[in-house]
Image (tube, rainbow, N blue to C red; front, top):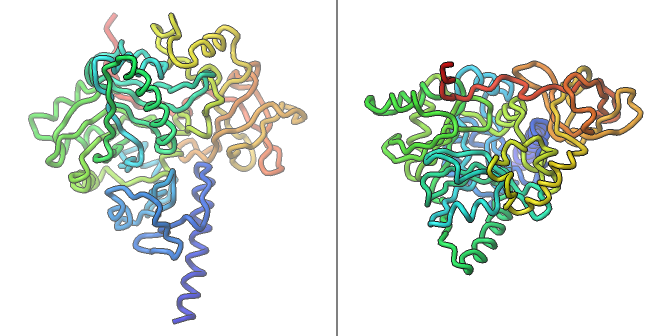
Length: 432
């Protein structure tokens, strides 16, 4: 028995190390062996951390071979039985189902809900049509990015907001601080957390076909005019779900908010379709990198301005007239002065993948000019790609640079993003 336990611990330790390396290399997560709770389907390690939160689908993930790792305080699948490369490619050709229930959904309600949120974010929320959402940014007093978020205008008095799991605590503290101040000043606005609901992301070119397969026959046609950024309430797997046509892979897809009691039934209904595979954090990061999308904490943070990050498009045209959001004066000044550095796409022309914090150098390799914020191998391009910040004078696609990857100097080239074409389902272009 002693020999068996010792052998088992040794093997688990090796698997933990491998998984940690996969996670770190896939998307720059800092994963420590003492925090790894599950390493394979049905295998529980002695390092199981009871403090990690679990989604409603935790047992479902383990049953299907999910390799669970700690992420933003949650135990989440990094991958399943297929490789991260295979999973990424399958999402681009068919569709993948991601459990993103660790993210925080909330509603703001009241006559002043829009006025309130527009004091904190850069987007033109008032200008949205009912049932339409947009990516926007919460900014601080210095014009830095507190978080990126999707805000959907359900009605003029109801907003649905989804914030990042890793930013939940600071975002809620920020929102509630300003909510208390505004309510004391007479604002009619309240907040409701949707911690009784799960969030599933069905992503890929087959997503609409798959979702249509579990809709009632007389409801299938709704998907034809259900476009990117829009939200609908649909009956799925016996439950009323809030469905938004959006995602973070660059593909067509849906994010589905479903009550906890119906989450398992919905997940099982979706994965029963042969054009759907479960996917974890590993392929999700590869997909968003190929799509040129920012990962908060890597590519943007509270010291980054929307101008530097190439996210000026999120600042609505109407909002640029007054800049009446937190840090608006700083953003206005940054626009007028121009950013000294810009976020760019990079293709590594030789050598190993350039990971976060790899130093970018001038073409002759003598001067440090920036650093990589996200990077890895692109399963779809079959190249090493990255994002990073360089001086504005070097942001043009085709610019040749060098990168220092663990002491080895490699050639890189600035590239346009997204790296792969987007597949968002948009309305047909108007006829001329």
